[in-house]
Image (cartoon, rainbow, N blue to C red):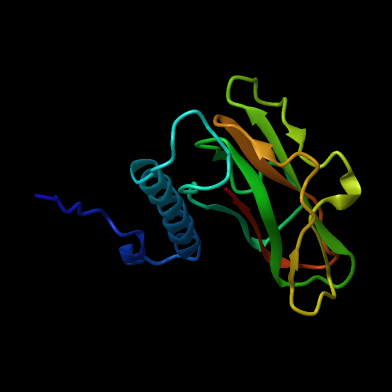
Length: 184
């Protein structure tokens, strides 16, 4: 007889306390829990064959979607919104950059970096050998979202630690950007 697993739903976290920073913390917790549950689900429901084969035909591995979010006013910074630990070998297929509120001039530029979990922190290297191809969103972009150039290095291996840096931001007070990376 199949068993039904009951699990906690991150969307049921409610804000019962007051204070301006708590809702942002609740949103971050929800995002982290969704990502964690997605990872657990992908690991427990995977039907791919062993050996990391990437041949055609047969069942395909599940799609991975990872978001890095800078809530509120953001700044030039490293390791924005933490790191993603790659669960299995995969290939980056699409990247999107979104910004909710633009600044007054300039652009937002984001870089994607990686190191393997066995390497020391601080040894991260950009996936964009051609720095001019980094995800870039102009302050006056009409819909505030752009599909980005793929990096020069798109293959990720299990145990890679992937982070993003905000290398440049719009002048003024831009708010809330999100970088979404999809891989298979």
